[in-house]
Image (cartoon, rainbow, N blue to C red; front, side, top):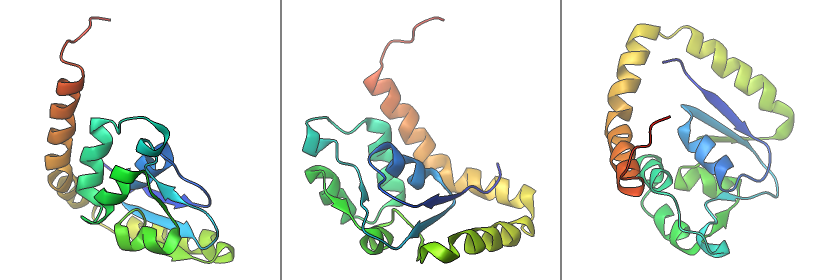
Length: 140
């Protein structure tokens, strides 16, 4: 229900990419690192939930990178939708703190309701995908 800010300071694959896609504001630092879903390149099928999350947050050309297990650097990560902002490493903390301060001024009940509405389709798709992947519920 609250804003989530993430900061990626190095390689993010694949769980790191999933976490970045789950945040509201996603920072990355400039540098020689990669982000992406490399499952196909290493012989693993991308999980349903990750595909739904990717369809929700990434630009359509990103899906071809997922099909080939492609990894991208920070600047292309912004263009494809893994990140929102790339900054120099020395200003990352300052920029994240400034964004957190800005988000404190947002009306939280309105934020929560709007976030639920924005995320409702992807959450429904993830639930449906989970049921497809795990059709039987097990009792604890």
